[in-house]
Length: 153
Image 1 (cartoon, rainbow, N blue to C red):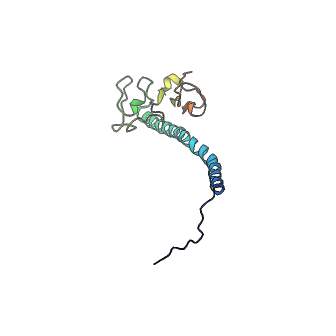
Image 2 (tube, rainbow, N blue to C red; image 1 turned 135 degrees about the horizontal axis):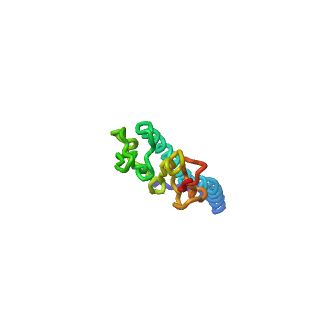
Image 3 (cartoon, one colour; image 1 turned 30 degrees about the horizontal axis):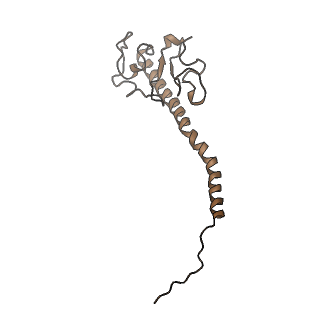
């Protein structure tokens, strides 16, 4: 008959477990704030990239048609042929964008044509709060830095 021999195995004491929990809590206090801000930073970066892509498409539109779309034609003029005057004569049959991106807060980007801004067309989003102004994720993001989003001169 076999006998089991107790070899003096011992478990962790409550103090040892508490030390590990405290160490994990300290590490989490450094890591969690960095992880929590990452989604908002990613949204802001996405908005900047989208605006840059739309701005590039507007430049291609202008090269073909000698002017930017009007505010009334909007950014949709980059996807489908505008019917509002002035109708572009050299509109690219494939369009300038496959589809219009939404801002990171699931709203369409806003647009002011060059006739309303006095020069460069403005593409912008009003941020997470969808109101002018704001800071951090609520800040307006635009391709025109010196013009407040949503206002024409």
